[in-house]
Image (cartoon, rainbow, N blue to C red; front, side, top):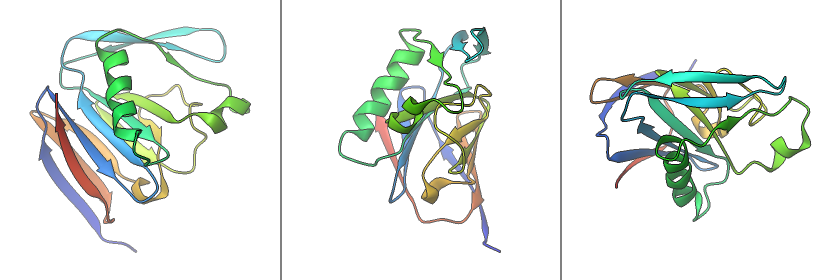
Length: 160
């Protein structure tokens, strides 16, 4: 059984925290305002998710390549500032294998390497690389709390 970690990290509204593993990266930012995100589902419904300023936007890039951080920053901007909707694919959709990034929003996000990217309309789970799997990220006032098995990863902050 691996050791569990619990770490609180300050996070301001103009910052993104990057959790970097060997095989992927997750960027986390605050939603920063009271608002909503539309979620298009495979059964042709649209869900409206209402968010508060302290809620999280988490974006997972399944390849930690040199453009991953820029892609994460861009997707956070599209969702938070431009109001782009999230689209959920059916579980057997071939495009899910080609998604460079996936995202989740809400108070808590659990990272899991055993799900198909882009196929989960529930916003408390996010496909991530092996290195970051089983980690839970919770919004706390003025920051985030990371809980889960003790793993090797790097935490990097970016300020807008």
